[in-house]
Length: 79
Image (cartoon, rainbow, N blue to C red):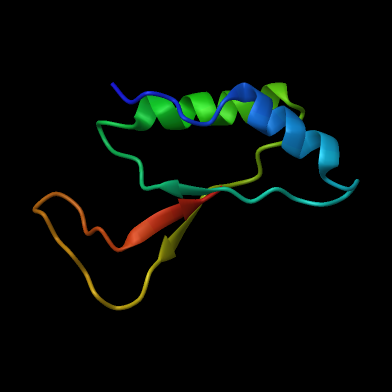
């Protein structure tokens, strides 16, 4: 289990200082069997702070691909 290192108060503070009509963009690790609950918690904290969820987009980091057998590790998700 992953320990959540982004507290709910972090999203509350981001919502407080973000100007009306602006977006918050979070860079997250690609989802896998070890972190899906952690990523769900992040989305729930953001929702409780008043953010709307628009989409999650994969970001391909350069052309180097580190493949460990299950998934290439050259991507992160942008939420």
